[in-house]
Amino acid sequence: MLYSIPHLSEEYLQVVDAIDDLRRRLNYFLQQQPRRWTGLLRRSTFARAIQASNSIEGYNVTVDDAIAAVEGEDPIDERTEAWLAVQGYRNALSYILQLATDPYFTHNEGTLRSLHYMMMSYDPGRRPGLWRPGPIYVRQEPAGTIVYAGPAAETVPPLVAELVTALNDTTQLPVMVRAALAHLNLVMIHPFSDGNGRMARALQTLVLSREGLLDPTFSSIEEYLGHNTQTYYAVLAEVGQGAWHPQRDPLPWIRFCLTAHYRQAETLLRRTGEQERLWNLLEAELARRALNERLLMALSDAAVGYRVRNATYRRAADVSEGVATRDLALLVEQGMLVAKGEKRGRHYVASEWLRQAQASIRTARIVTDPFTGEKASTDPAPGSA
Image 1 (cartoon, one colour):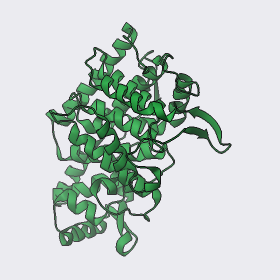
Image 2 (spheres, one colour; image 1 turned 180 degrees about the vertical axis):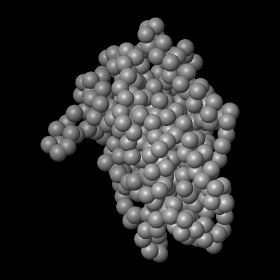
Image 3 (cartoon, one colour; image 1 turned 90 degrees about the vertical axis):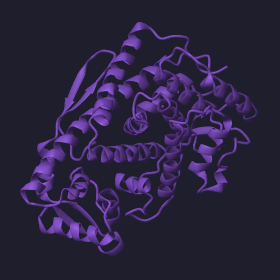
Image 4 (spheres, helix red, strand yellow; image 1 turned 90 degrees about the horizontal axis):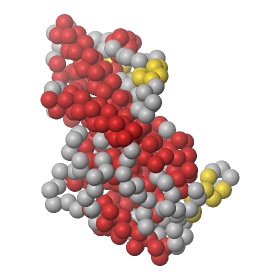
């Protein structure tokens, strides 16, 4: 027996429709009006998902280093266990993006094991790709109090087999609900010795990415979960009640996930609008200064708070290392970027002029409760969070 829900009430179906409407609007910006900046937005969204999902487990890196992982580069800061965890998660999510459009794909235990191996292979002691051999407990730090006990190890293979069957079954439930149930069941089964939370979030993203309504990179709610970790844990605790209780009502979890989808879509629509306005502003400024428009690739990143490196810029602008070096030096000369660090640590950040340009296009963040319609507005915050 797994956590399941036979149907949704009209209230929940209306929220699903509202989310789908937001996602269609986002898809229009991303697919029907493609611009070069959409690639930068896609990369940063992917990096934020990787960063956020790992931060929930205490593996904290900057968005800059998450972008470096996406690009296959070394981190700006030192290589740490957190960096290795982010690299592993990048590999798993990259594979999920490949599977999103595979016409022959079906869910299976091998895929789950493979994704876990990609995430955890940096530490063989955590049994990457293998089911756990014994009991498992989730402890609340720093006291070490047990807050969840997974089902017995011998039940893991049949429970995972049941989950795989459920994932492949046809159902009338909306994909966001099916993905939420996949997440809930995997994290409650806790089939691995470590990395169960990351695996559950990755599985949710995999189910969503197969839908086809939206670019798979923008389907994930992992960034939202990373910013709302305590609420995320509280809802799981409410539904699980400390042990494997699949007979309990998963509706509080479904409500939380649908709220996450709505608010993540709001965030992405806001960022999309801001990115377009920023791009247009910088494009006009480069034209006024008679500078090459490829410099937009560096300015756009720096404007939203990222540290620009030669390697990142030359890949985005498709130029040689020498051209990239000259371009970045020119932007410093023009007062648009500021150089920081030396040698391997050399990078570039926004100048005061560029920070003011970014601030001029910011809009207030709107946070909506999709079930009540209540909205809260916050002042524009630094960066693009």
